[in-house]
Image 1 (cartoon, helix red, strand yellow):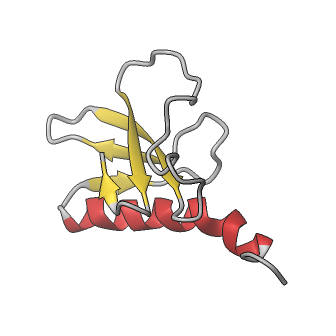
Image 2: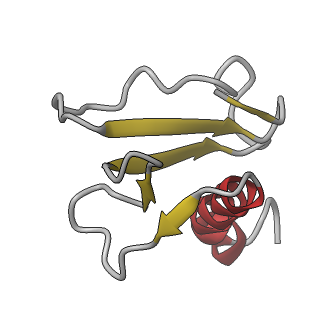
Length: 96
């Protein structure tokens, strides 16, 4: 079989979501995970002031085409108050 199996690539995004959530937990943040991702929310963070932030985690694997390792500009979204994106690039191993 050439390349990575579909099962590996299909699960990549979910694995990175859990990885990023684990980093947030390690920092002592209060994190809540929705059971269903119907509204593009991967995690909810409770701030110290009691307000909540909705978080969408996006990732790029090391297997993407050269030059696309940090290409997240094509994500369509509409403005939502207290809605944050976390971008992770496996190739450059950075969170932005």
